[in-house]
Length: 174
Image 1 (cartoon, rainbow, N blue to C red):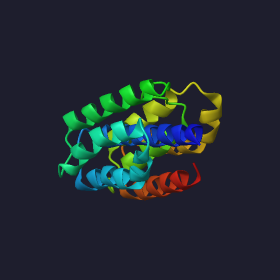
Image 2 (image 1 turned 90 degrees about the vertical axis):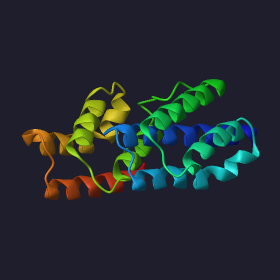
Image 3 (image 1 turned 135 degrees about the vertical axis):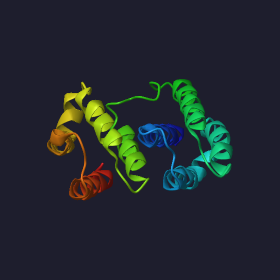
């Protein structure tokens, strides 16, 4: 049972790390992105019955409960996550090959309700820098779509809708 819980802790923390990465891509934390972080807290509160997750949660929840989250607080959450993942014997935040991290990343990007050029460019770079062949194959469709969209160096409204829908589908199947 404790082993199963530790997997849940790791998964929750890894997904949050991806969200933080996605939310911070454009350097602005919108109200919707803040709500996504708040929802993560609500969705994972049940894991607080056990240490060490309770320690992680008790440090992150007050930051989120403050009413807004700024860039410095995102960095603080990231540091807390790194320490937690290290404590439970996991790699630090950017387990980039972890599909839960990427799921969180996509949630973070989509949480604002808008995808801007900077986010698309940084997501493109992120996907290009992946070494894990299994991960590359899983997200190859996303990379191909982004490459096509980015041919002109910007995302227009029609491309935004297509990318948003595709990323939403990926979140559901990951």
